[in-house]
Length: 312
Image (tube, rainbow, N blue to C red; front, side, top):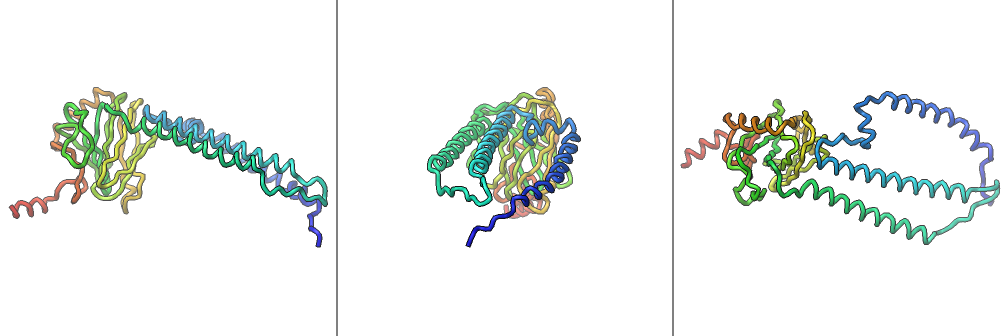
């Protein structure tokens, strides 16, 4: 029983019908791309990433762009090999079947070794950028950040910072002797104020469920996990207002976990913290919730305070 082959003219007819459709699709794409605003041009240049507003974000963007370049080069090589094989081993006559090669040892070795090398390179550059973001031993400022259902609390340190204090949950040592805090609610979006050109470390706490603290313009986000303290630092380079949010589905009102970030001059930041310290929103230790937190800001409710007083 012979191999049934299609008539040679069928493929040409189909290609003839596809040509107008392809031209229409390309025309529509050109029109849509021509309508992009100047605000979107940076997104194209950054390969769909926002323009970084921090020193650490520059490293993150470089890693992102490098990964895309490597992926595109890999795609070009693979596509070139595919097209070369299609052309080189194409059927040259109506009754010819190309030689069926079962394997090619040099090519299989290349396809095994090349991905391993790529993974090693990606891993090394990722670790390098991670160290830049996470391992700054001497931040200029520390903010204790609490993600609670369903808003944020920002504890700003008042006075001199103790650089030897760490984020160990087993002790009561913090970077400052006094804190002034800002806490939001589901209907009140809080604002985080940061000084420009200074490195601020975020210690991240959660008294309830897993949240995720991130600002798109900073090009970094990190999980906020109960029972442990994650941290990272940023050095804002541009004064302005930015938007932040929770990136982890944390409950029914997850969509309300928004916050604003205002990057101001160092003098304005010092004045802001001083004004905040004159309000009633001050404490000797940061409000970080606790193992049995009962309210959004991690404070003991009035009912529990009365119950403890009666017990005494």
